[in-house]
Length: 577
Image (tube, rainbow, N blue to C red; front, side, top):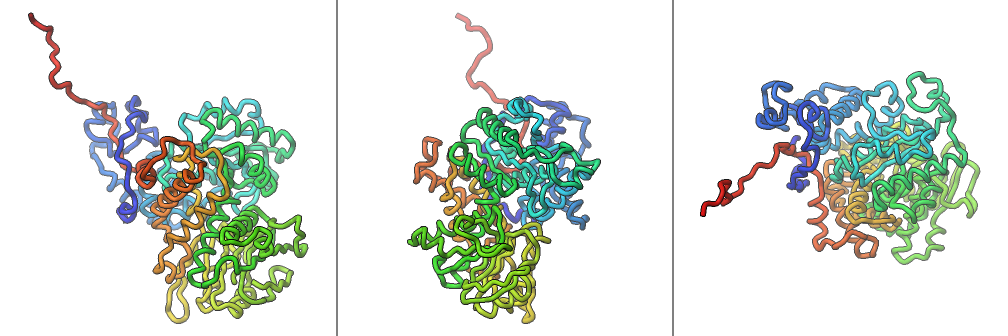
């Protein structure tokens, strides 16, 4: 297991000697960037003031990783695993990322959804050491000074939340910091972006969560959310301060803002800053990639699908927009593509002015009358995908009806965490006799059917998209991120699914391949950005693949010994006439 993914990674062999080489003694062990535990060599211990501060044994990283994994296997509670993993990250960064990368399919559900959602709800109760930067509305007018307190000066990627809509859990205030931290863990684990160049930020403007306002362990401001102009001014100041300190090409990813703010901030900032919203654009790309993958089974182009959305939210808007773009790329006009989009919520069919504010996607061949909640819908469409975050809206009747009218119904239950998914993988497969093409936002295990066959549900996880896109954006010096970048990413992801994986029931590659998937996506997106004139980093690399892989951070321990070398042929005696 320790070497499972190493064949997919081409590590950068250069040694970054600028990093903390002046530190000595206990400071080296207290800094997670430099700490190697008992892997410090004898010379390092003697020269750097560590001798006697560690047990005499000198360990390899392999032994450390083995101890790490053995301790994890003793734990059954996901939250305890999360606490243990985050503790290792706080002490030894390279060891943390090595183990995470080499068992990513088992550990991603711990550091990311669904366990990170539970960790956010318990954030004040499991708090050990602060991660990231906390900016409150009380800091208005002084955000640049707050950024100056962050110890790293070469930040390239910022993930920011205001905690208002954490996954499907609602307003968690500063407890939402777990989301930027988890996202940036995957920036490094999936795409090899250097962790010291990543900055998680939580902006605290209060919370409307009554439970948190009465919780003595809550760690944010005890006030209701400020929704005045002051809030907008705070976000403006934050954006300006980030680019002023770190540069115009600094990537700023918005995460888990409330629906209204997410849409308007994306519109407000997308042409001014290097920014994207993963809930809108990342979710859209991973959902579209799944749809594109189904074409190889269903045999129908995306232009022949009719799409019905039920509900309203960020994810659905992004999916609808990207589906229309994909249809247009295949020759359909925008007007005709939009006619393929139907909107329905609890108030009925949406008017044109409300088009694209939606949540649950149904697209199945034929006509079917289904009940979702109290609504009966007769829909001419080949599958259903949910991003409503409202739980089991795809009832047994809905799934059975889709199975009756379609040879290969498509069911996407994309809401997070697991409890918010629209249906389970077992229901989707068993109620359609294993014929459905299924994907979910949170992980589900393999399903064994009555005939003994085993299907492996694909996880439509945004982690297939945002790390690779972020790496490409950082390496290309992009100033603005177009939706076409996410369309390119979706196509690249769909193309990486093999026929064998598709036959297993997957619509996405296995998570164990996500590092290679992310690197290939970064290469394709870099090629696209330079071809379209959107890249500003020059000279343009001729070999994009080699360029991307040369920038990938690796988990090998570095030597902190000073570089010692001879001066051949140099005499230190005075010249004699």
